[in-house]
Length: 157
Image (cartoon, rainbow, N blue to C red; front, side):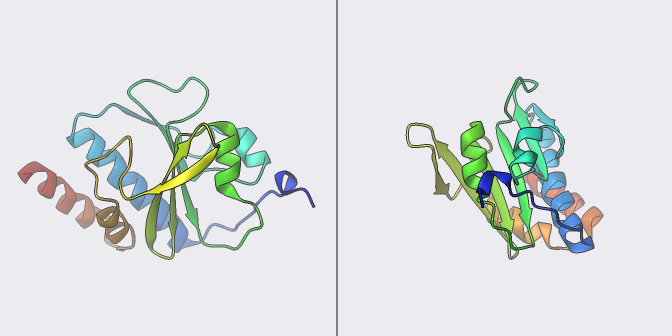
């Protein structure tokens, strides 16, 4: 079976949706509070990725509206799949991919010459955002409280 023909179909779970929305809300609030221009495109932007089994849960362009490829894609993984999401994103040239799996967030940055991703402890595009903090906040069920705490934390730092 050709891996590029595998399309992942997962039934959205409440937990998965909470994680997706919480990570997105934290990223977007952080950007707003830090005066970082960020454009959110949700999952709809990379139709080619979807056809190849790696539709992002969220994707973002930083600094300017997207032209072809987002700067950052987020995947919340809660099901097993045979599709290698990172190789799909690498072939599309997505510079940074965040994978949220087992309540942990990992950041992968594309090494263009090799076409592979390197694991990083910080985002290239949002280097002051603590990804471990994002992961801890993403799993909490009290999203409004999380966002208020985050706003207070960033206002005092």
